[in-house]
Length: 530
Image (tube, rainbow, N blue to C red; front, side, top):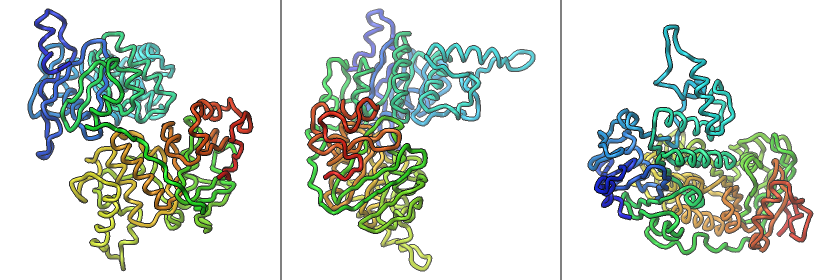
């Protein structure tokens, strides 16, 4: 369907107008085009997935539709009425609401205060708080959220805060709801609740547009899919009639034949040896080994303790006992500086909060962990620093406008590349990865996989925690399954290739299968297997 051409059809046939029409919208920042004549339509009572690589223009399009950005050209119409461009208040009045990736909740205020902010109920004696709380509780119940409206927003998990933002939007009369990466920051167990809320809104006639990098979410939710590439609309189709490979090809402009490259062989030398490491709060101590060039995956359900283990090895999370050695040299526990000195690097799950400093440029981010190696007598050796960061960013194939480009202006995939590159300005023997492709589009994900394999091929010992099962199965020479902070099974490469292995991993992770049960070689929970 050509959404631009069809925008006037409903009116011609006497049909109800589209809930939202975007016609020939263009936008550039500092002379660089971000949107190039984009047009799309949202029908009432439908869910549309907006796909595209990082930097394709998805968030910019949503911000123009919701009045946060002013378009350079083009129009936005709600139920046939044109919106003034760059006027967020007008968009709200016309029933367009956006739930951004970075939620704008007032964390010190209660749920009901957040829902009614800007439209408080007041009487001659002041605010009618009991009435607002009762109305908020009714809305929460309607969307299946069993929490008190008097709870402070800051005490809620991100998934619940997100639903509160949706309730706030729909309570102001929103008939078009735009959700930017709604599942990127919420736990797996909260995703189904969000799915139920989105479907409920669709059934009430609301038009929803959401962005995601996950094909399974598009399949689960979307009636329609539109794809942006380099600021242009390149696909606009019914979801049921579109194959996954068509969507991926539209996103990246080429067929993605080999998402996961072939694993290189690893060496025999034990690089990382962890013995009896008791992470604070974990049910049992952990033993594991990683050899030179080996990629060891950490699988498990949400809350299994994968992040805690990786942070414990690096020294960011407190450990109460145990021994960590790198190439035979003991590394002091609970000291990230000792880990860095021992050539241990960490790429954390939260690249924006813990991986990089978004307000700083690429050069400063790229040299931050090893800044001392570029100083002499208190003076910064700028030429040496720039050369080292340039070499490191080139090795990860970073796409940028130069060393002085701000980190926050990069796409998610390129931000992740900077987080990788910042360690490569020095020597790395152990690379700890926590959800290395979270929030990264499929094209950049393929590039990151190649970076990981290239680094392993250089002899690095890699530990990778991931909730993405294909990553664990395809990138790991060996995988540990975790539950409650302890290792409950070890799977060799040949076992990871078993067609039924995902079910086995789930049963191990959930406690339905004992690690010394059945015919699968998973009883080496000490991690000493080859």
